[in-house]
Length: 244
Image 1 (cartoon, rainbow, N blue to C red):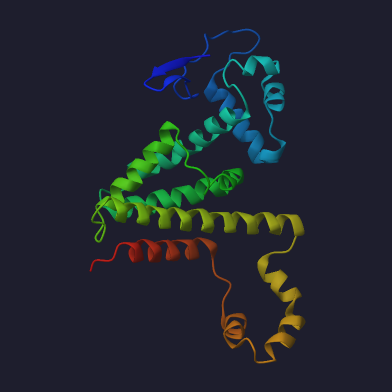
Image 2 (image 1 turned 90 degrees about the vertical axis):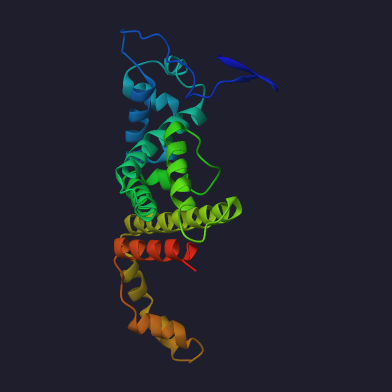
């Protein structure tokens, strides 16, 4: 195991800082990038709950112990997978215009797109921060952008803005992914689910106790998820960074 001496004693190096094992051609050439790509594909197909080092090894045609030369455990495997997804998000942030707002919106939209492509990624949003190199690059780009926004005058303002922004992003994305999964599992989308409860809702709303809910049910439209996300994202960003 690779360790580093620090003022607090020796500590194990995280997977991103450890050198790759010496390449071996037989029976299969491996790398952390190849292992992560295979793990992502399996997670996309079967979900995180069904992902294991043994299954990845079988897919790669090697013994499970061979993979432990590259990752010490499942947690490190997830770290590699998460940072691989963050690489694409970071690229979207780099391609954004120089304007701070455009950068923030681009990163948020790329995060949503990544979660819709890799639904398991949504399950890992909103917890402890991800600290891989690409995740750190996104964090830096987002923080640097918001630090240029009107109304963000110091580090405490920046902390609050980032907290609220990340909470919106995780909540909005996880809700959308949950609805997609529920639709697949039940064969019933949100509109059909609401329609199935139509008689019950009609009786309850007729009592007059829920007038605002009645307006939403009767007059409200079934909104497009992408348009809703973009509208709410802009509202949140602009509300967090008032010009006065």
